[in-house]
Length: 165
Image 1 (cartoon, rainbow, N blue to C red):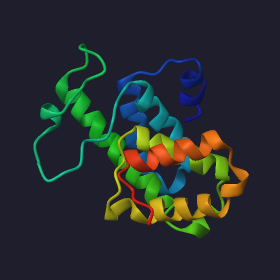
Image 2 (image 1 turned 120 degrees about the vertical axis):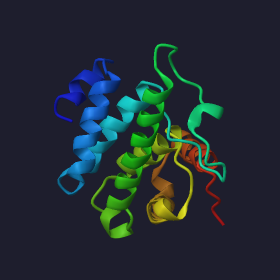
Image 3 (image 1 turned 90 degrees about the horizontal axis):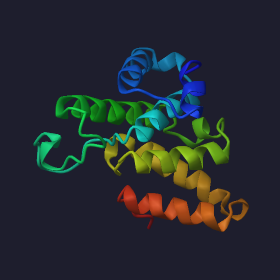
Image 4 (image 1 turned 180 degrees about the vertical axis):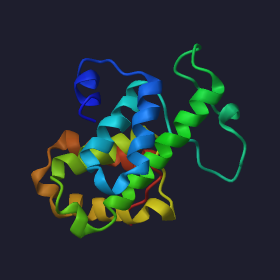
């Protein structure tokens, strides 16, 4: 992340670098901070990579794939897509309780929540703890958020198929 952050801020990322970095993160998830994970996820978003679609069809991504670049091969995209999903699950697990979320600023939670929605995270049991805890923290501080932030949170909830009842 220390190398990736300046490169990402300059608009330069490359898929092989992201794949290598994300493998390191997943292999050492206990020692990696969530904001460092978010930088790598932002790189994947910048490259147009999304998590695989969820659903009962266990097909490969080829049926629903919209690759960001024709130069990007289907197998590369599929591997990157599953890596994005694994990164999101690891970040969600690290932040699966309100107590863990208390260590993170509300602004960062909102950014991560919206980033994960853009990357294709869907509400499912494996990430439900993070989503519920994040929503609880957001709702507790709703009066401190601006209208645009609230709008983006609601759009993210819809993208993640998350129903707040």
